Amino acid sequence: TQLLEQSPQFLSIQEGENLTVYCNSSSVFSSLQWYRQEPGEGPVLLVTVVTGGEVKKLKRLTFQFGDARKDSSLHITAAQPGDTGLYLCAVQSSGTYKYIFGTGTRLKVLA
Amino acid sequence: DAGVTQSPTHLIKTRGQHVTLRCSPISGHKSVSWYQQVLGQGPQFIFQYYEKEERGRGNFPDRFSARQFPNYSSELNVNALLLGDSALYLCASSWTGGPGGPQHFGDGTRLSIL
Image (cartoon, rainbow over all chains, first blue to last red; front, top):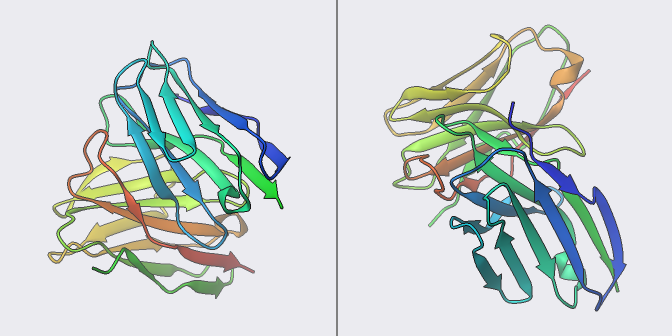
């Protein structure tokens, strides 16, 4: 069974601080997605990474896919209260159409 | 354009009953996936349908079933409800449901079992 472990599970920081969230697995994936989910809403896709070592930036968010395509990180610079939410990584299980989501990191940014 | 719409938004049922949840995908999207999200956890994959055919199934009992209609909308049915079925049920649509493709989620149906 392919598992995606995310760390940390919870994170509470002050506005303006930087943070990094990790998504790890022992399996290799062809691509990996990051989503953010706010209370009462469905997840919203932030980015898809495809190539090992790939780095993508979305304003203050930087996403990196591991060289071996087994892990990924999300770095937020100068966090703002609007960044508060549940961050989820997700992959499509190899050879199937089954999607697997990570355990999630719940981020709270205090003003 | 309208996003993915799900109905109802909230539902309360008792043990043993059955429930039908509905999902309308984004116009043009042919794939619909269903997920169960228990409080504090990531979504768990239940089904994926593409062109009215089941293309993927997660580790859920046979009490869970789904179907996709010619207009690509979908229903998720759950029979013999258990307390543990209480969760947020999410629907996601995409063009093909293939690898790496973006999924667009609805805001879910909150199901509570008493």
